[in-house]
Image (cartoon, rainbow, N blue to C red; front, side):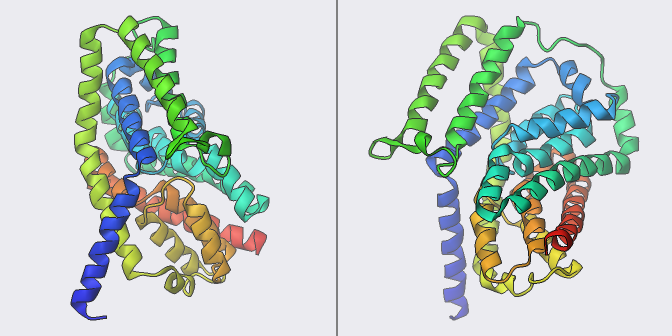
Length: 363
């Protein structure tokens, strides 16, 4: 293939990757994530977040809450970004915030059970265990490295306990409806086939449920919230959308180019066995590639069939869903380049170590 033909092939793959990325379910999930993030920014008392995620919160509370929060969200490394940006900007400590950033895609319940179903319960269990441990260690590492900056940042934060200035049931209902909608629209057809049951042409049961919960959300929001509160919510959501979404598209295009340049069969030849180098390569590639929620599992299964070792597979399972070029580009806007690259480095290092250990245990 000549240079012109190869370049056109790369561009074609980039375009197709973007088109594939922007499917209906993912766009709805992203929009909902931005709305949830806007709600956190505009309607949640900043000091409530600080109470559980702040730098001065006892670590056993803040890191436990951050890791557990991640298990409940069936989101990918891109969908978690607006939520991460919101809690960090509202005063969350960099440690708990990055623990949450890693845990959302890496520890979510759907991914763990799908891994177990497709790759085996031994791999599924170890993935869950390592993901929890790695998320906490990454957060602790970020907090330790940037402790001086965090101390200064913590001094600027006031204290308060109330989640918001409105009745608790209204706030809980507001976010619970959005959370349910996010779970419904991202539900895996392999794990929850009923939700993907077609009702008319490409219109699925999950789409109907999404609309029903959306109508309930609109009605309750109009009943309970003032017009200026709704405008502030939508304004915050749109502000995050403008910052994050273009970077996501650029990152997805770059990830598509990498796929075109480095075929999976070529990667598999370098990640066989269980050497530190093989685990590092798998972690590094996983940290750059974009994996939509659950898509990493069949890809890794195919790579294992081509000869990828169990250790590198585990490293890729940890680094792949939790990080990507879009993630790095976006968090550099939120945290700065130094912190973003440090986060990237910690993910690669800890994923490499866990992959190597997994290779010894299961090899």
